[in-house]
Length: 279
Image (cartoon, rainbow, N blue to C red; front, side, top):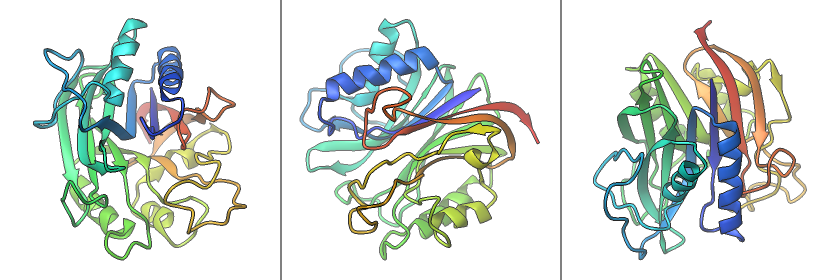
C-alpha cells in the first residue's frame, strides 16, 4: 500500500498553475492510496464552489472556494481517470489573504473524519493554531491516517513538545495511527522533536524502510527556518510518515525533488510502500 505526504505551499508558489499540473500528473501515475497535504490554501475572497463537489467529504461546516488547492487537484485527477475522495480543514489565516489548512485524499471511500486541536490556541487569526485532520477508509477501516503540521521545538508559546504531547494523548484510543506531514523537526537535530517522537513509539517509516534514498525533503533554507539554520545547510529531512505500529516498509522515496518528478513546492514529498501485516 502506497501513502504520500507533501507540504504543498499552494497558491504561494511561482508558476503555481504548472506546478499543480505537475503534481496531478505524478499522482495520476503513482496513485497512492492515501495522500496527506499541508499548507492547502484557498483565497478567502474567492467565490464559493456551489452544488455537489465530487469526492468531497466534509469534516465540518467549511466553505470550499474556487481556487482551493485540493479541490482543483481532485478535479483534474478525475479528468485523468483517477478518482479520489478527499476532506479539507481550514484552520488559520495565511499570508493575510488565504484560508490555510490541511487535507487528506483517499482512493477508497472515506467512512469517518476526525479533527484534533493540538495547539493551546484556537484562533483563526493566530498563525500558531495547529490542528490534525484524520480519516478512516473502507479499504483499511482499522487504520487512521492523519495529516499533521506542527510548530517548532523552541517556540515558547506553541512548542512542538506540547503539541506532540497532546497528539500522543489523543491517539491512545486508536489501534493503528499514521501521522503524515510536516513535523518541523529535522531528523538531523538531536534531543529535540525528532528524538521525542521516536521515544513515543511512533515509528519513523524511513528508518523502517528496506529501500530508501537520502530522505531530504527541504533542499534549501525556507520560510520559518532562515533564522534557525545556516545558509550552508545541505537540507533537512523534516517531512515524516510515522506509524504507531512497527509495519513492514518496503520502500521510502522522495518525490517532487526535481529528480523524481518536478519540484512543486518549497518542500519535497515522501511516499512509502508498506505491507499491512503488522510486525
